[in-house]
Amino acid sequence: MERIEVLKTYKLFIGGQFPRSESGRYYQVLGKKGQAVANVCLSSRKDFKNAVVAARAAFNGWSERKAFNRSQILYRMAEMLEGRKAELVNEMGLMGTSKLSAEKEVMLSVDRLVYYAGWCDKFQQVFSSVNPVASSHYNFSVPEPMGVVAIIAPEENPLLGLISSIAPVIAGGNTCVILASNLKALCAITFAELLATSDLPAGVVNILTGSTEELHGHFASHMDVNAVVYCGNNKAQLKCMQENCASNVKRFSHWNTDILNETSEDPYKILALQEIKTTWHPIENIGISGAKY
Image 1 (tube, rainbow, N blue to C red):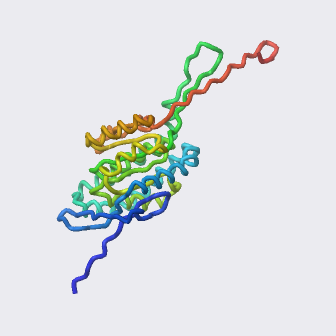
Image 2 (image 1 turned 30 degrees about the vertical axis):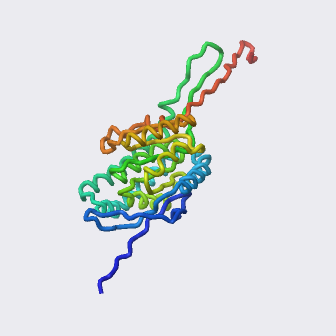
Image 3 (image 1 turned 90 degrees about the horizontal axis):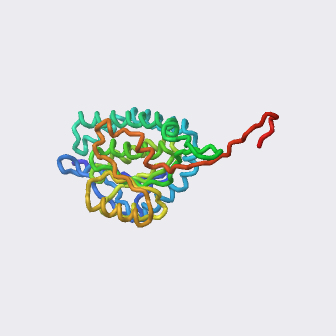
């Protein structure tokens, strides 16, 4: 008898766990010959809300970590990705990507994690400042993480697009909820399996799979999301998200989708998701006798 292949079901990644969609819905990812290669959860609005709750709960702990420790964790993610490159190349092949293109994408993904790992403990030095003031005070401006960032990843280059969107967000101390590529979702959840066994705390990165058309409005209108990053090219979705973000005073970024180019590696993407905190401190004058006045 001909054997019936058992397709893997790729679940969501929320709060360090792998739940199915609360709606019970799923869809099939198709291979280059039109055959079904896997079942993938179709996220609902409730799944997104659950992911935001997990990201908010993880924010204080992650943002208070030492920058060097965040750098170590991103570098550890790169190490683990390097160790599973063959699996990821194979998955991309199932989804129709050529072996050469898949190998290039995995290598660039590893390099991109290393790049942002290097910036974790440096961007504050670059972007902070001591400001001139016309009084006897010191005035400092320092970048601090915003909070929970909702991201819609690029549809193409499913692994590199995902990592290029996540890395600058968490390097700056934020937590995130990201909607992965719809048609090529397998690599996103395999990457989530890697995260679950790395040093990254639960809830810092939450990965959903499903329809951008269904969820993009909720990403921009949720009141406990501090910023939105959109990496797509759909003009109607872009307009909707900009309007929703403006209505509740949420920061919005539309990032370049040409992620294969090294110019997409940019520390200003870290800065785009930082609040600038300014501190005033009085200057203590010391007289000849040593007394402060």
